[in-house]
Amino acid sequence: MKSITDLFIRRPVLSVVVNLIILIAGLQAISSLNVRQYPRNENATVTVTTVYVGASADLVRGFVTQPIERAIAAADGIDYIESASKLGLSTITARLKLNYDAKKALTEINSKVSQVRNDLPPEAEIPTINIETADSQFASAYLSFSSGILEANQITDYLTRIVQPRLAALEGVQRADILGGRTFAMRIWLKPDRLAAFNISPNQVRVALSANNFLSAVGHTKGSLIEVNLTANTDLRSVDEFKNLVVRQNGDQLVRLQDIADVSLGAEDYDSEVRFTGERAVFMGVWVLPNANSLDVIKRVRTEMAAIEKELPTGLKGRVAYDATKYIDDAIHEVIKTLCETLLIVSVVIFLFLGSIRSVMIPLVAIPLSLIGGIFLMQSLGFSLNLLTLLAIVLSVGLVVDDAIVVVENVERLRHFRHGLEQVVHGVRIE
Image (cartoon, rainbow, N blue to C red):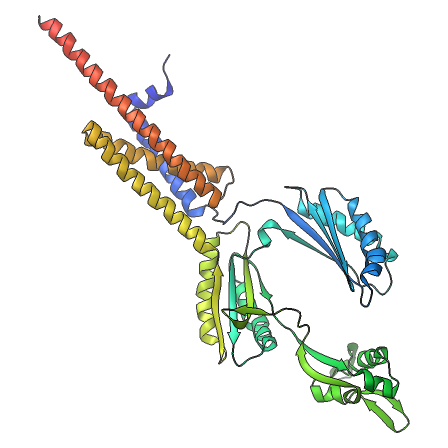
């Protein structure tokens, strides 16, 4: 019975054509294979956050967390649920089963939360639902922006208006989020002693701010030759306007906001602070699309970042603080280096033991061709080039090298045996 190898031995042209097809398919796979740091998986987490301003942790747990938690528990695809209740905030985290459809789970959890929305306290805000996959937990690159002149909220405002849209528009970028930023906000620090002196409650201050800082489009009017849009605009635009806001009026007596509070233009919160090399900074994380090549995307980000740095305001510095693709790039270069060293060692060993240049050429062609064909199979099976598949390639190099040496040695042994047998037969015929 003839084996498949006999076909390629008897038809060398067919062998060359098949090898060329493997080579072309493998080179195409190398240029288009998705490069990532870790393999892609569907291990997702759904987080339900509900704000209940002023409520204690026990009140939040009893009236918000437990009803939502019971409703979410009835959804399909959930592995386990974690919840945390603290002052004014309820957080419920549902971890989905591995490779469960995240969109389906998000839709069902959203439906369950909507069913118990009317059972929550009316003062509680509408629950917000967010889904996070394993790929989105860490960005592929983090950018740092710092300044010794500008404040953090000024840096955040510049990044939001200028830098973030430019990075988010790059091909392959999923999103570019600002981390540790501080958004402009008017901070009103109430003075308890002054409130008590004027007999004003914090709720009265809130009502006054809501009533006097209002913006609404009420419609439009038009005549025969003109049309005018009407806007009810009472919004306040400066610190002085907020300070002069009338909180209460008793006849000729006016109590303004500056009489009972300190008013300043600051940030929405001061709960966190980001520092890079000891200097206060604002970070921006760049996430790559799951089907995009991380190396190519971050290369575009670096190119765009170089252009952004030239246009930054005076005193503002930007740099790439962390680049995850450097590790991937180093790993790929180490694999290529290992392959080259392996080919060199195999060539020297085979030449020393067999003494034939022809025998050396066989593994020099067979080993790279086998690995290139393996990369084409990785692409066909939907694998990506990541740290685990690179480790598998390194291990496969040893197997391919071992098989190549064994095959070459066996072929040489059979050739010498056949040559000796022919000499014996030829000698017998001469006698």
